[in-house]
Length: 336
Image (cartoon, rainbow, N blue to C red; front, side, top):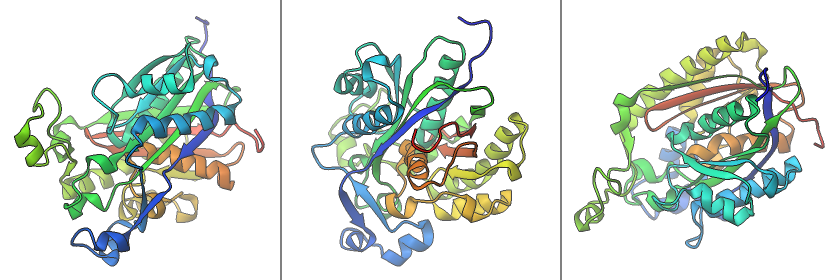
C-alpha cells in the first residue's frame, strides 16, 4: 500500500438500454392514465422495457463491456466488479458474479451494492477508496435495473415512472487534481417504508398470499418521496461542494438523478443553476433507478456535454432513504 493516496477517476463509460420503447400513449391503454397526466407530473414521455428473456445482469454486462472498451481495459485486468441495483436477478448469488462470468473477468472480485437510486454514486465512492489506497487499479461500477419486472402494471402511481437500462464506468488512477474530488453519502433510514418492495426477503417470505396481494412489486408513498427529494437534492449538492471547497458557480454540468422533472427543476432553482447546465434525459428513459446517473454520464460524453477539465456534480436520492453527491473534474480528453 502506498504512503500517499492515489487520485481516482473515470477511465471509461458505457451504457445500454433495451430496444423496446413504451410510450405514454401505449400506457393509456394499459392503466387509468393519460399522456398529459404523466408528462405534466413527471416529465416522462417514454421509457425502455427489457425483453422477457433479459435480466438485470444481461443489461449490466452489455454496459460493462462497453465501458471496458471505452477505457481500453480487458476484462481479465479488472480487480473488482460492483453492481448497484434494486432489481437484481435473484437474492443469491450477487448479480455482479453473473456479470463477472459473462465478461470473463476471472481475476475480479464481485459483489452487489444496494442503495436504491443512489446506488451508482455509492458504488463510485467505494471504488474510489479501493483505488486511492492502491489496493486495486481497475474497478468496474455498474448501475443496472429491470424494474419493469417488479412493477404493478395496474398501479398508475408507479408503473408510469420507471424504466429499464444500465450504465457503467471503469474507475482507476488519474492525474493529480483530476477525477473524483469529493463525495458525500447520507441516509434517512426512518423513511424506509416510503419506497420499498415488501415481500420476497426474510421479513416477508414469498407465499401465495404475498403473490396474490402483489407484495413483490414496488410500493411508493409519492408525496413523502417527493418531499425528501426536494430537500435532500439541495442539501447533498451543497454538502459535497463544501467538501470540495467549491462554489456552485464552479460547476460546468449538473447530472441529477432522473426521477421527476419537477424535482430536478426545483433543485436547479434552489441552487441557482441554469437548466442549460443540467443534463435531463428522463423524458426518454424514465426513472431507471441506479442506472440513471451512469446513463446520463455516458450520454454527456457521447454528445460532448462534458469535456476535459469540466467540473461535474452528480447527485442522487433513493430508497432507504439515501442520498449521495459526487464532484469530479473530468479527466478524459476527446477521443480517449
